[in-house]
Amino acid sequence: MIRINENYLKLKASYLFSDIAKRVSAYQEANPEKPIIRLGIGDVTEPLPEACQKAFHKAIDDQGTREAFHGYGPEQGYAFLREAIAKNDYQARGADVDASEIFVSDGAKCDSGNIQEIFGSEIKIAVPDPVYPVYVDTNVMAGRTGNNVDGRYEGFVYLDSTPENGYVPSIPDEKVDLIYLCFPNNPTGATATREQLKAWVDYARECEAIILYDAAYVAFIRDESLPQSIYEIEGARDVAIEFRSFSKNAGFTGTRCAYTVVPKALKAQDASGKEHSVHALWNRRHCTKFNGVSYPVQKAAEAVYSEEGATQVKALTDFYLDNAKIVLKSMRELGFDCVGGEDSPYIWINAKRPSWDFFDLLLNEAGVVCTPGAGFGTCGEGHIRISAFNSRAKIEEAMARIKAALA
Ligand code: MLT
Image 1 (tube, protein in one colour):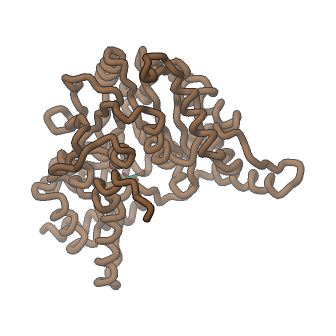
Image 2 (cartoon, rainbow, N blue to C red):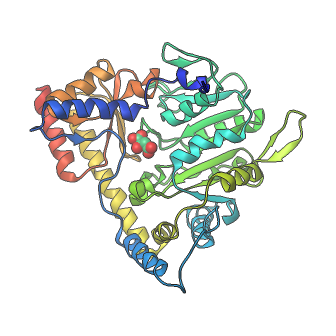
Image 3 (cartoon, protein in one colour):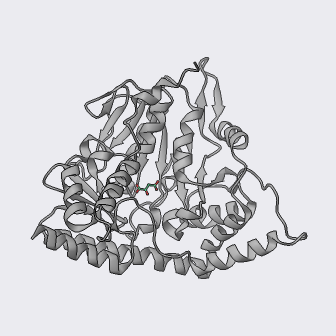
């Protein structure tokens, strides 16, 4: 009989969000009359910005005519979108990124999960704890770790994010090759200052490591002193890959569009010590395994950068940030220590008990779904994450229900 990839057996039985979905379905089956409010997975609820809708419709009409029809597009994305990204998300902020360094894709989850394929199997990897599970699981699947012992895989260097370090991990005292960072952070909502990011860039340069910088939540940064891109930090072009998404800024979770920046300066070596372009490797992988994001979706994404689109995206992210304020205020009034929720849609709450216990309490007594912190790693134990992605009415009702349940 054919053999399986046994690295999959090291994984926890299922992906965190599938575990949660199973518990929620069981609750729903048992309590069909009790409506649930979902503040777990960070999925948006509000419609696409009008500018994106219009561009999407127009592009679909184009696809219905012989003259304006588009078949396969460039695997890396259409120039109109890559140029708009380079100009607005980078050059406008003084970050040196060229359109040719941008790879448009169907999700930052796929990109941050797939990128490890182009690196060697023996590399040393640093992952935050708590962590977006995709960074960990994809490396486990690829065989870069040993077994999971007490919630941690052998072979990783874990970067603890704790109240003591303000949830921004300290530089490890050993050399690593690949570092995963995410700011504004999923799940804690913490942000990193320019100085903190600079320390990571300097460290990566010193050990000739590469930073995988997940900036999927950048649209929620309101504090102007915070860096939005790692490329705003001097020297980052030589050591960092950045992931971004249209999911959380423009509500594309069901539409699918994201991008990855791989600077041409980025190098990695083979076993003989010969240097290779990481951009060329990723391009090779991307062209082999991906056929590009659909033309209408890229047109809809391009509209984010129009004047109308930018205003609507700002309003949309402001709306979720106002939800976050309501959650922060309510949970603090109930006596919980919270972080995040200010330049981030996630609120990280000290549950004062095991995470899954608090998850079950909120589900069973309030009909509210959160995400148990333990699902993000051992440092997440004792915490829950509440997502601000929902309608105002549901956020308010969820807070009222939690208050009543805890009274
Ligand atoms: C989350 O809830 O952590 C996110 O929705 C995950 C994702 O964007 O894939």
